[in-house]
Length: 409
Length: 165
Image (cartoon, rainbow over the protein chains, first blue to last red):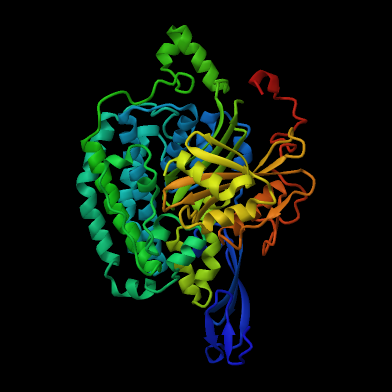
């Protein structure tokens, strides 16, 4: 509280005149199981009427000790753990993990694998952003705009199914590449997706982008400046919405991203509307990348020659001594791994998703740490909502796309 | 900027404060003493040429076999100006491990340090709110330390010898 009797200074530096405060202060729980939090996290809000004066966060409700679990599992069994970080874009987590192990093993994957990965990862990014943006619609009262993109997301999930049989927790790919090439159904569905998605996307986008109600609700809600966003370690679309063009795909290209032509959209105000707009543009850019990757898909094998990690064909396991040995070694987690430590990061749905892996040559990592972008930027949330209304806190939470799985590991 | 250019710049900037320096895979890894860690990172952040403006990650590692150096705090720094990463390590003894907090340099260190404290018991001095973050408050141990096994040791249905562990 400020010494000046007529002013109240909030924890984020915002100053309010006492006349705007009723003085009827209450403490309410926003979460952990509030339907508007879209996940299990608690915010204890001190409110004066609708105005938030203070917020205290509690996280860790779905902590599943992934980093500890990883110290007991062979490398190929860690992929399913990564599924459960940001489960809106699991393939990015899976493939990022495979790339980390490949970096440790110093395996060079064929160009075709790079391009296949880019296609899958950009599809995952589209699915991730579709969910995030449509949920901002729900929280501003537009339920239709939530249902529309689900038919498009469904098409992406069908593409996942063709690749790995699963939809949400995909466990996709192998260390060294993919377990199989794109099949004819995948090709047909992907071509159809590339053909029909832009029109469907623009139709949905038209419901929100220039919608008067949507704009009035989201512009100016939960803003954060570029300086503050950087101080808080923001990455990904939330940082770009504040006007900083940092993207791992460009600064440290992995998986041949340097081959593709795409734009990094940036916002100006860092508010909910900018975050929405940045994600919408990223969806368009992701589709551009998919088109380029698919049209220039190189011929060649769909995995690298890493027999120590790449599960052989069942046919070979039954007929070939060497394949049987490798099969056994992989299943029992006996593959040999060099001693070393690597950090690899990919541009996940929410920002820089990093893997810090220390290997002592044993069957499992000595230490594996995930850089989970949600966890790092969620600490800015109280600052973003203090002084605003509860309804703004709801849309701010959905627009920064905090995924409980990634937050709590 | 290449790692060798960075190593040279670090040598002239930090001099004796570098304990060891090596290139592991694509990243330069520098070890500093735990007392120097804060001042080294402050120097790297403020240096106009290097300008390590972004703190990517803080984490702990436990090496129970290293007497006097059981715990390691690993800082991942990133200079966007030069598009280069740097890893800084500081080792701490198991007895009362404590190191200066980076929260005054990078606010994002707040939760990263709370997480490291939660899982490894490393104390960060001058941290504004050093409490557990992902585990419950009344937990009385730090679960990522190697002495806490992941599986229940009393189980008899699983024999680790058969799984190469």
